[in-house]
Image 1: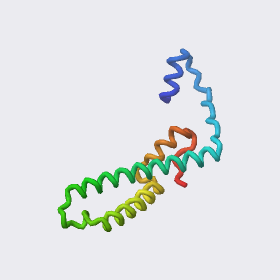
Image 2: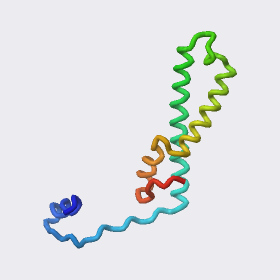
Image 3: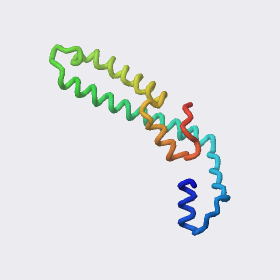
Image 4: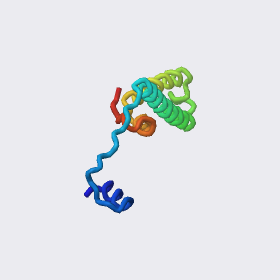
Length: 113
């Protein structure tokens, strides 16, 4: 006996196992596409913020003649971090977008698009 059958038995007092679970309604494809894009963009923002915070800590600890204190290098590092965060979010590396999608579109699964 499965756990959901046990729960139903405890609630209803019957052992009817022939009751089929209700099918989940299909989500609107346009909504799923918008939700996916928003979830991936949030993951991108989160990763970018994390990288910026890590760079700021590195710059604070760096010596005066360090490569990390050179303004030209900082701009290039910021651009590289932005590209990296976009690529990582596109691959859903942290799983944040998947977690958001599981809440917004329960029946959609975690199909990476």
